[in-house]
Image (cartoon, rainbow, N blue to C red; front, side):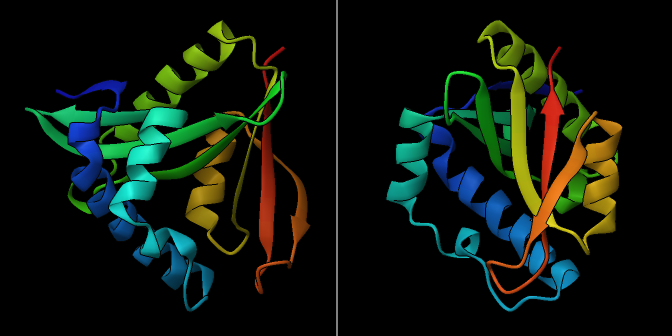
Length: 154
């Protein structure tokens, strides 16, 4: 069984490991060479834990998933760096993390959550569609087609 909680500074190394694993897979699926998520420093992750909402999923005190969210204005939050360890995928961890995330956003009065993902990453797009997101628009600003996905809480 797994649980979800807010991250602490003690989770930093685990979050870095999960992020690198998830985004290594992401660049393969997206057909790109690199992404900033692969080059985060420990200090950057610690700052995110202190300044943003960062959640981790864990099994027996082992962190197996993480996600970060930041309010970008009164009504909107931006979801980033979402990933689950390869060996723990497809058992409901990502769905549970999104459920905790959704509840927290509603409590905070957030009306819309947005995120970017590679439009070629069909498994990710399907996952987000299954959680109530829709494609708002696309952009080529990072050298590949990125979809801006939105989820409205109404």
